[in-house]
Amino acid sequence: MTSFFAYDELTWPEVAQLPRDTPLVIPLGAGFDLQQLAAALGAPARASLLPALPFGWPGSALAVPAPVLGALLNNLLDSLRADGFTRVCALAPQGLQLGLAHACIAQPLAAGQLPASQQLPPVAAAGSVILFPIGHTEQHGHHLPLSTDNIIIDHISRASAALLPLLAYSMPLMPYGVSTHRSSFAGTLNCGGRAFEDFWLAVVDALVARGFDRMYLMSGHGGNCSFLTTVVKYAGERHRRIFCATAYLHTSGPAGEASIKAHRVSAVGGMGHAGELETSMVLALRPDLTHMQRVVDETDFVATAAYYMDWAEGGALVANPPWDDDTATGSYGAGSVATAAHGHIWLEVAAAEKAEHVREIHEQHKRREQRRDAGYGLWGIK
Image 1 (cartoon, rainbow, N blue to C red):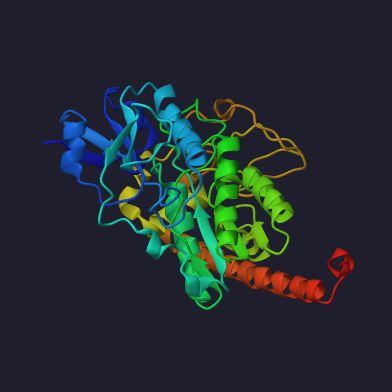
Image 2: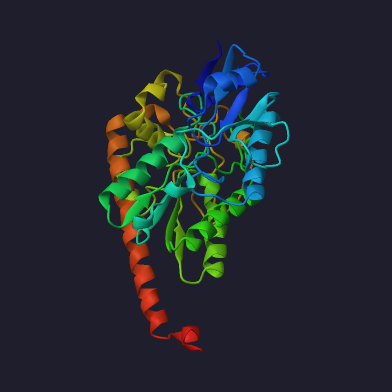
């Protein structure tokens, strides 16, 4: 009988040690019959399920054009192939044409998947800010799982929506983003920048077509941020009566910065990636996936006045040198000083910070609509 294990609960050294003929499967949704999947894979002793895409295909909560979804999936599968894996595929409902050729296993639409009549977000959320937690499945040193960004941003999104239940609606987590440094350490996936942008712009298009006009693309992974900025710029140009926003990560506004300064143990450089902040947050949320005995602190980033690494990347320069210039283990920071207690504090601040952004998005949209209705600027031209 095939034993299925969760890819994203591994650390990158554990991925590096996997036999390269281990089947790796990216599901589109949930509820598939694993016995049927095992048979389609040839009944291997072990196979791995990667995080499922939560939407994007017809019959899911939110559909985008098939070529857009296919390009994203192709890039994710190519990431695994680039790490040497020879048996990678998507698992999809029957009837989809995604351009994946033999890299797709089709099964009947499972009972656990949403029919089109139960789309998300629900109609009742039309006046809310729709929150999209967007993480990534990527390496986080020797001690944190590949799911680190996903665990953190999913919690923050749901917690911020709980603070404002009448103003915000949190969508299911998107567990994949963009990594332009993936060759240095095993396990990291990559949607590809252009495919990622096309996907999220198509998501915005689909929501606008259904009457939604306020969205917050909420990133838990630094590599997504510049691409999401491009998405919101295109979205605002294409749909003039919406307010679609993003921000740099989380815990990075005035309240977040103050809380980090008040409680951190590490010096500047201790919170770049898999450092004190992220390790504390995962200790608070998933201590079972946090391997503190494996922590290796790395703070010897090649820092200059205008370019250095901490939680909020510092300085005026924007660059992307190879990660292995600065880290041998994949960590930037001092994870060894992390505590669950500080993780809870910072998670609470992060949720409150995002809730304040929700309030601002509502205020921005309301005041802009008032100006438009009054005929301000080009809105007054008949």
